[in-house]
Length: 414
Ligand code: HAM
Image (tube, rainbow, N blue to C red; front, top):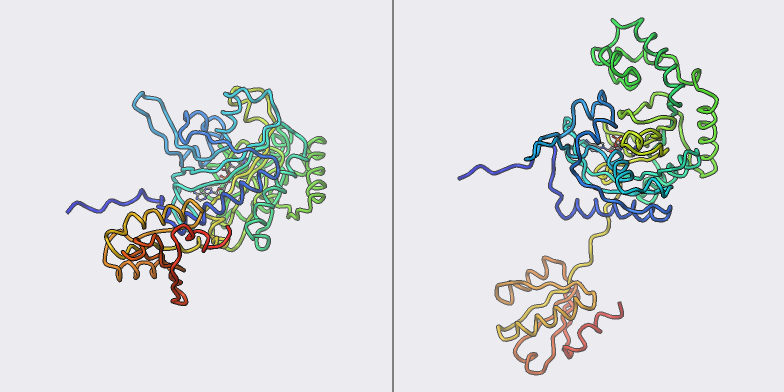
């Protein structure tokens, strides 16, 4: 016997229960995004590798270690998208949409990262995301964050998820701060964890994100960006917090948020929970004013977020199961076509209806009970001759005969 083939490590099949839950998460997000004026885009799952390598930062973990990159049959280097933002920027430029701003984009779909799989972390996962492209005003950041909060609220996640907010300042603030960080961590290079020592040369900001115990006190003593903010960066930060208050969105300031992707400036934020173990970030994003220009377009200041659908599904209640079907059972071979007519009439009226494909009447009735059918439609030779059906209430056991033409009406107005 050939071996049973397995799905790729870190990738899962979504069977009806999980799939329905995922769809519920995506539909809920889509509905809220529409209320805020966001329109849905779909970009390809495969992109030219440079779409990501240019934008996410060569030294980011995603680009350095996690991308599914391969040469296709023409020798072009392609990558399975690890996230949606870079692709949306590429699409904005390619479709000439930088002339018609703002663009408010919603998207949903699979993403791929070669990470170590664990609960809440997969190699194929799904995101819902939104990008608000054009406005540089803090009002845009605040409205986008308010929409993220509204999506979580609509999923019943008002409690237990906290918004953590930070600013990375503008380029000038960040350059001064980075220099101060390099000096601080450089003075203690030997005490740093191995990972952080490597980051010191490549991407010192990421040291602040270190989970290594031996980095903890050095990170706590590190100079904060606050001292280095330029006046305009400070204005953006102050305005954002005032606007968020006007939107009624509570937040906690957390200077340690630096995010794993390199395209951010000014606002960064994460919605986190302690209900998911180590993978506590549910939704995250920030402002990225330079990314569209890196895709060969003009400068288009933008802000966005994405959330893991798996994580939202783990936290939220599953949607109610669909109503059980009416089951149609022919009691004689000759009644099969009449049974088909009854099935199709029910479905055309929007009533879920199923039939069994084989077996005697008893077996077919057992099938109806397995489906928890509330009612069965029985058609035997007598009914066929009279052009009627027997409608049996499977809960009370009551049965009555009615004309086939009246069957749909028996299920009441819909
Ligand atoms: P990210 O923080 O890399 O940001 O991912 C956003 C969310 O996707 C995470 O908070 C998490 O819920 C989910 N996620 C990420 N990796 C995995 C994984 N391996 N398994 C399960 N869930 C995962 C971005 O992707 C940015 N594009 C967000 C953004 C949009 N920034 C601006 N616009």
